[in-house]
Image (tube, rainbow, N blue to C red; front, top):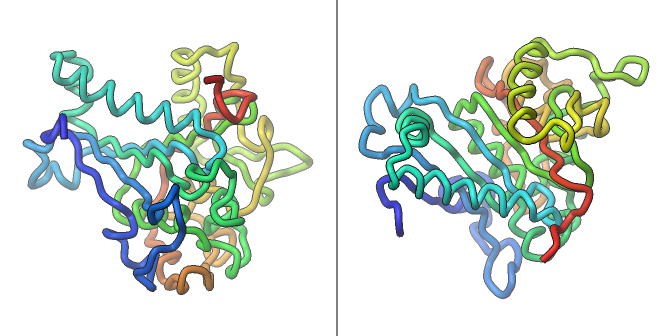
Length: 281
């Protein structure tokens, strides 16, 4: 491992036993059992005591839909950039890595990525979260469960989830319950979303990425990761925050979609990277 003092990796099925009660291979990924990779980047030398619980945390999701690999390339390059620039003495990167924890799920939907398909074994992970979804139709996927368990253990202040199929930089809301007369309502943190999003857009290119609410620029969905990862820790349950009771993969305890107040409330942005699902070779 090239950067042992900065990087740790885990397999979700190993560290989160709740997501796969059978403990058996759950799908094939190019001839080997599928695994959901989780990466953490931070200065491990100083990650102890109060720092272990107070260091701000961010999450980057590469491919919730497996046929949209541009995000995988992006977050993989991000990991390499943070580590190499840290080693080269880039003071700004050193400040970020010393004072922040960056979590990356490169192939969030491992099965879909391996098979070049949107779904995980016929199930859409971005309709699988505990948000305005039927109890039997959420947390069915290993993808959704792995994300759920990571959020249950970490308070992510900031999340970027990468997709493709269009170009846009968008924020809450992105669900049917937050539509009024065909337009999105404002979230309680609308000003923060706007100010942070403006800065992201300035860096990424405002002309390239149209900016606005998910409902207005993309479309509304039930069971989406974006609204769930923003609202699960403070919106009402069982609606819109669903208590899930799936049967897939041996089931999943309904207690895992009952959240403490304030436990999940990330400032999350959906990045639609390009009109093409797969970038040119």
